[in-house]
Image 1 (cartoon, rainbow, N blue to C red):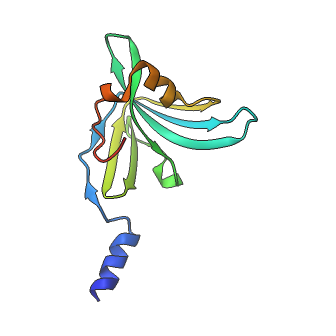
Image 2 (image 1 turned 90 degrees about the vertical axis):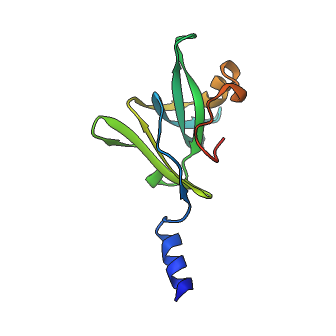
Length: 126
């Protein structure tokens, strides 16, 4: 009986600790292609505005593995929810962009704002 209950919770996506809701200044749904035009992966990149440099810097990202992870509009905000290992995430942003690129914008942003300078607010995430 207990095993069946645990299985039902796991299958419902109810497993894992809930990370505190996070707000970023911008959320980007990006699909990256190689030089031959073949799709490589889709990711969501979370940015904060840098007033010193007058640009959005990537603070984190997550790989989109299912359509349930794609950001959705709720009222005047964009929301992205997913479970990653032991955490369930809920990220909110007022700005949303959809891009298709040959390179990886998160890696490009990393050159301008190294990971050691990022806020790392996404618990358990890069």
